[in-house]
Length: 263
Ligand code: CIR
Image 1 (cartoon, rainbow, N blue to C red):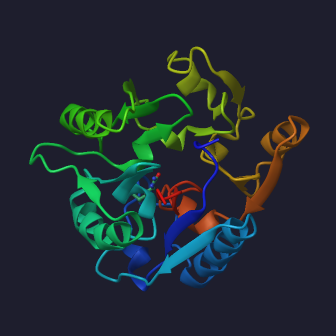
Image 2: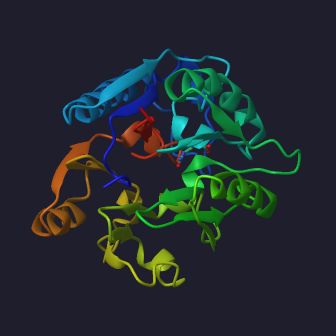
């Protein structure tokens, strides 16, 4: 299924400037060495599924550049380079564009001066692309993306990220062609009508951001009740340490772009 079967991923190594990364609440300085170790485990998990992982070098100029997901939307037909709504992250998209061009041949670009959109607000399912408006993604960004991907036959549905939540996918992930993992608070908005929804365990909201990548569901370590639910539902769960990225509101989806470029 194209929504979770991928031949490639792009990641970027964390930079020493990560200590200046954006965060909603300061819960301590991220430890670079530990983040690097977690990042290596993450890349190894992606590779263990048979995918080719392109590891980009650290970019000191952009503290949050390890969170590559926010720079682009990758679809089977092509990629769209985003315009991140966080001013300190805007330049990360231009850094990603040539790598996508090399892998896809050509890429589209969100270009409107008033349009802002980040990949963390975009959940691609088998049948549609859900885009959550948030503090980082505005109506103009959603409208421009809608027009760009319509040419490729994709339908965008605008939804809303709950107030105080960084990105739409902070609170949800795709588990398979018909199933979403979600916090109760996001599911309560009704945005997943028609899907099967599995709720993260009470008190484990911080693990809603997982990824289905080929045969694996890759989730942050330390959320045993949700892990057991996913295990019992038959998913192959792989846990990765996320303590350092979590200090910067980052999780499993943020750390990669996942795609299968058109042959
Ligand atoms: C930020 O605030 O932009 C970063 N510290 C975290 C980005 C996480 N990205 C994501 O959820 N896709």
